[in-house]
Amino acid sequence: MGTPESSAKVGQDAVAEEGDPNVVDWDGPDDPANPQNWSHLWKWGNIVVLAVITFNVPLASTMLAPGVPRLLEDFGTNNQSLATFVVSVYILGLAAGPLVLAPMSELYGRVIIYHVGNVLFIIFTLGCALSTNINMLIAFRFLSGLVGAGPITIGGGSIADLTTLKQRGTAMSIWSLGPLLGPSIGPIAGGFLSQAAGWRWIFWVLVITAGVITIAGLLVLRETHAPTLLERKTRRLRKETGNMNLHSKLDSRLAPKDLFIRSIVRPFKLLVTPTCLLLSVYSAFVYAMIYFMFSTFSFIFEGNYGFGQGTVGLVYIALGIGMMIGLVIQQVAGNRIMEKLADKRNNGKPKPEYRIPPMILAGLFIPTGLLIYGWTAQYHVQWAVPLLGTLLVGVGICIINININIYLVDAYTIYAASALAASTVLRSVFGATFPLFALQLFQVLGLGWGNSLLGFIALAMWPIPPLLFYYGEKLRMHPKFQVKL
Image 1 (cartoon, rainbow, N blue to C red):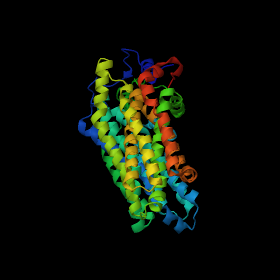
Image 2: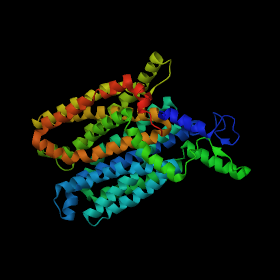
Image 3: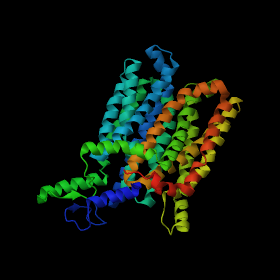
Image 4: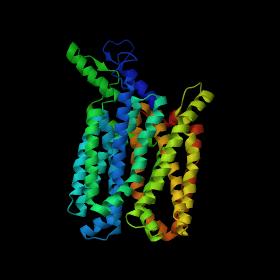
C-alpha cells in the first residue's frame, strides 16, 4: 500500500532493477523524445490546442439553452422538465465519459483519445442538428457529451506529462479556463444565433468549429503519455535487436483487460480518500453554481427586468468577466505564493498544499456574490447590482477550480488523469442535477433566501481549503488513507 507518488515509484522499481540491460528507459535526462524536453514551441502548441478543444466541449453544454423555447415549439411540446433535460443530458454524458476514456488512455495513449473523440463529437453534433424529434436530439446530445469528455478528463494528465512543476501553474490555468469560461460564452452566442437563424444553427456552428479544431489537433497534437511512448520504443527495439526480453521501465506487466479494469477502479479509489474527496466535492458544488445561475438568468432578467430573448444572453457576460478576473489574479499571485511558501517552509521545494492559499480568499467571494445576486434581484435593484454579485461568484469559481485541478495534478502526477476523472465525474453530476431543482427552490424560498441557502452551503465548505493546507499532506501520507493504484 502506498501514496500515488510512492505507488508509482514502487511500480516502476518492481519492473526494473538498477542495471538491468533489458529495461527500456529514456536516453538520459535530456532525451528529446521525453515530452518534458520538447521545445517550448511544441509544448505550448500542444497546450494551446488542448485548451481550445477543452473550451469547445463545455461551450456546447450551454449554447443550446437560449434556443430551447423555439426547439420545444418545433417539436410541439411545452414540457418544462424536458426543456431542462435536453440541456443537462449533455452534462450527464460528460459525467459518464471519464469512466471509459480515462482507462482507455492508459491502454492506447492520450492523443488517440483526442482525435477519435473530436471526430465522433462532430458526427454526434451533426446528429443533433438533423434530429427529427426530441428523443433523437436527447440521445445525440448525451453521446456528444460522452465522446467530448476526453480533453476535460485527461487534459490535465497531458499537461503533467509536458510541464515541470513551475510551468504547470500557468499551463493548468489556461487549460482550466475552458470548462469555466465555455459555459458562460455559450448562452451569449446561442441567444443571438437561435433568434437570428434558429436553434439548429447552434449545432451547425459547433460542427464547423469542431471541424477546424480537429484539423488543428491532427497537425499539432503529439503523444505525451510516458508509458505509451516507452512501450512504442520497446516494441521498436525488440524488432531491431530481436531481443524479446526487453520491457519498458513503466510497464505495469498487466494484461490489457486487467489494466483497463484497474484504470476504471482507480478514480473511485482516489475519490474515497479524504483529500481527493473533499476537493472534488468542493469543486463540484462550486462548478454547479455556474449551471444553477444559468438556469435562472432568463427567468429573473426577463421577468424582473424586462430583458428580451437576445439581450438576456448578455447577462452571462458578468460571470465570464469574473472568471477572467479570477484568471488574472491566479496568474499574478498563484506561483508567487507557492514559491514563497516553498522557500519559507520547505527549503524551496514546492508541495501540492502550497497551491491552496488563493482558494481561502476566493472561497469568500462565492457566498458574498450569491447573497448580493439573490437579494438585489428579489427587490428589483438596478440590474447591474445583481450582475456584480454574479461577477464575484465568477472570480471565486475560477480561482477555486484552477487551484483544485493543479493540486490534483501535483499530488497524483502519474495518476493525474484518474484524479481529474474522479473530480470531473462528480462535477458533471452536480452540474447536470442542480439546475433541475433551481426554479423550484426559488419558487419555495424566493430569490433572496434561495441564494442565501446556497451561500450558506458555500460558507460551510469554506474550511476545506485551510484544513487541507495544514493537514493535507498528513492525510495524503497517512497509512489508513493510502491506496494501491
